[in-house]
Length: 76
Image (cartoon, rainbow, N blue to C red; front, side, top):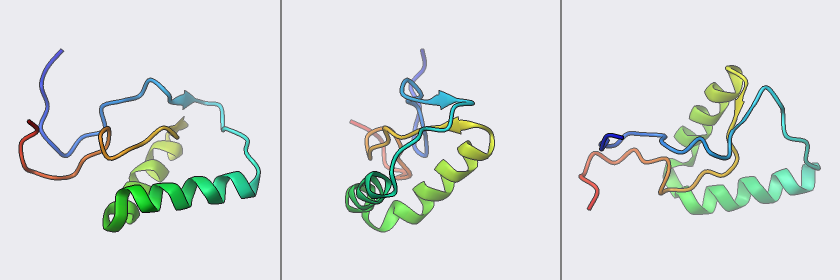
């Protein structure tokens, strides 16, 4: 294991390769709203990262600011 510095997406434990998760539109809307609130102004960029992963058939739903970080400041 190595120590990484931002930007990074280190946690793929909850990823579902090849299987698109099936949720109702209401659940997905709630999920998006929650992530927008968590990531704030960074959400558009995080959303692009998730879209790119999905393009490669990697579906990652358990994202948080602790496992996707863009800041260039060191983690402490």
